[in-house]
Length: 197
Image (cartoon, rainbow, N blue to C red; front, top):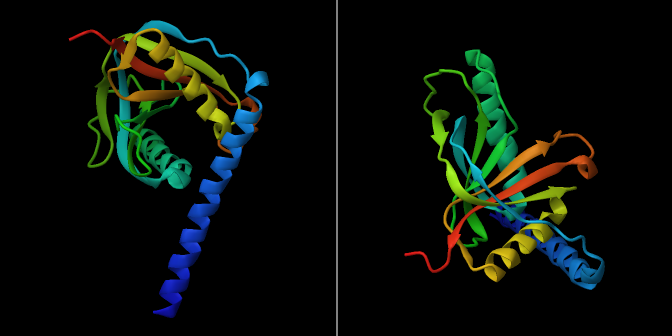
């Protein structure tokens, strides 16, 4: 019982350390707001896209990266074993409409034009077209991606829009063990005019 308690305490400490690091990052961002990069948000139509995807749940924000790594490994492994091919950059989806600290519903998807049956976990389906997608290109490591999302949320509110579906992250330049400074992510949020019924 004591060992179990010790393990639980160590997990709680690790979670709080991650939370503290996020708070420190946010404080640094606030202190540097005058020197923060400006992001350009554009609206565009996004066509429907066939993907192989798998859904999952990240226990908390600290486990988001490992959760996505596992999910993408699952999808890429299925495509490789089935002779399928990837036709575009990886896409992460966040299905929760409200912010959550725990049990974050996510999905990993790989664009493909392969005609495969899928399996118990990996499903081939079509990501729906989005008539009005707010998009922003975020360069750099994921540790600062919150600044990109803040810029998007501010733009959405200032321009009279509201979120109308799950947001996506399209990894235009990414290598798991690569240099995070070279990452390029397109943040995508479906929107509609706030007064739309």
